[in-house]
Length: 466
Ligand code: TYD
Ligand code: MG
Image (cartoon, rainbow, N blue to C red; front, top):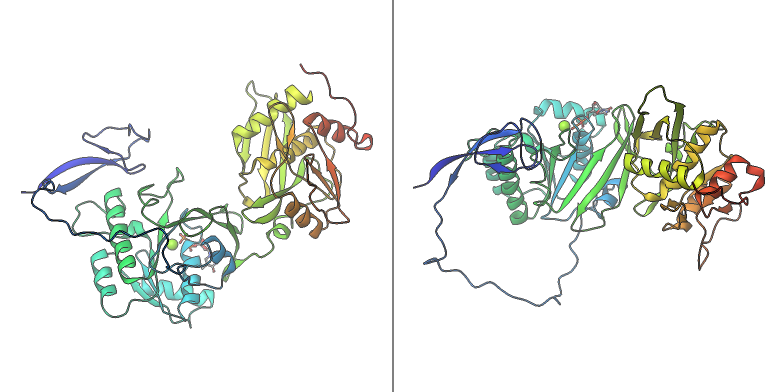
């Protein structure tokens, strides 16, 4: 006899607890435990039940590469690893209102032509989705629509006839299985609903996209429980006030995970941004202090972005630090290195750091650009004109080489930059555009000296260590 046994599941991390508590012991979140009844079947063990023999094969098979479905939206296809794989499940996570539904309706419209696309909305009525489609200019596309939240009904409908090649479920938090007692959006429901839908996708061979809202902690609600169940996880991110949106792969069983796609939110939906560097630099003002252009890489793509710093005397005992788009811990490290190895006492000031355009940079290669922006703001002097900066800074103040120097220089040259401050090159020298002047910075003290007195071209001895 199965019996219902209450348990308490943390809605943040999915940990289960036998007793209710105000705080989840596993992740430390407050007020996240919710009672979810589970019906547990009595354990049977293996006695009696006969298993079937499974087929065991060698590694060296002759299976062709999984064919992919290309949407024609290049920014999306690249992040998905070169198109969607039939029978796979992809999770698109992001803050509410960031544009997930818009993006996926556009993708569905592109895929509807060959093989069919079904868009199931659990949040909006069919008429609302139609209105959005009209606004996006895709209303004529043969996308099938449904408003449904019951996974049982959805699976039953997909079982009849030939399923479409592409199915979007928007969002997984609104889906429920009637065999569970808990409310939609709880960990148990999200997990069970996703499992059912994914099973159906594998069985019937359609590419499934699940939309998931992200909670304030930055994990997909019903969190982490979904990431390991799907083949691909993409996050759609961006600052609400900016029109840029970045699609980032964080897991991909069928492709690389360091690719990003850049979109712009327009009044007719999301438009691809094929030359992000130009866009990120569009609002840049020449000749202001505290700004440095970083020649970065996002996956295989070079991307120039402006890093802005503001250093101001602090009125507080503990000076303020605010960082947008970069890692606060890394900023603290650079401040310490500037102080100890560059002889620049900057730590007592309030410091604000911002990556323009709402991009989030994860590369350590941005260290040198951050240091340059800080020094420029401190001195009030703009950096030399038309200059890009990149390089990683080590704790002893050395500037370390970074990968893909050639692509960075090429992109800078393409956008009209004339000079690069970069790490010393060892061994083979990276090719650089003819009209780009590469200046090698060996240590942070060199950078300080160079910015102190640009004419003296960084060849003064380093200040004494303190
Ligand atoms: P939406 O796709 O509904 O977000 P999500 O599904 O992630 O919750 O996007 C909502 C926002 O996008 C909304 O604030 C309005 C804006 N938007 C545009 O700017 N242009 C458009 O053409 C559309 C459809 C939406
Ligand atoms: Mg939505």
